[in-house]
Length: 241
Image (cartoon, rainbow, N blue to C red):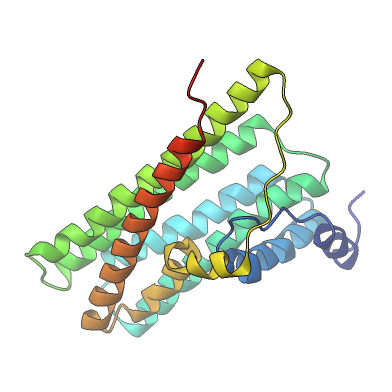
């Protein structure tokens, strides 16, 4: 039987994933928000997959508004709220699964499929907004394209690296080693590449010039980080088969 909200929240606080390598927003904000939603979801009897779907509804609703509505302060508030809530719920499904005793392959598959769609459609929505409402017909349209390439390559590279590493360890009969603890400095350094920060940046949408330049900076930093981490992942893979 599900425990009380307080009991669920306390149990989740004692069973958090390692913060190794996690950006600071995820560590200080999103995982705590996800813990709140997971504890609440367990009380009302939701499954992890149901939470994943609810997360997708908020996220995709925010993306739809971003790509279709005229930039304004109410529009920016709605988009940001939807994306932040969607991201918080995205952190809740895994925590709820642990609270219920474990997740499923279907749940992991669903989570990654929704994330992949989110990554692509968010940049498509920004491109549509640049073109339709900001009147951009120049190189600015390449900024969300750069962001899209960087985030897709990073997401796919991360998943593929984890999969190949697990397969190699299983082939050799070795257990998966625990993640090394990351420094707080590294977590802060990753902040510009954090999706959570990007969610809040959409509050700047009514300030067209400010939003353009902030978005460009984040796109460049995300691209640079992706290149660096790809080199790191490549060096960490086995050289022989």
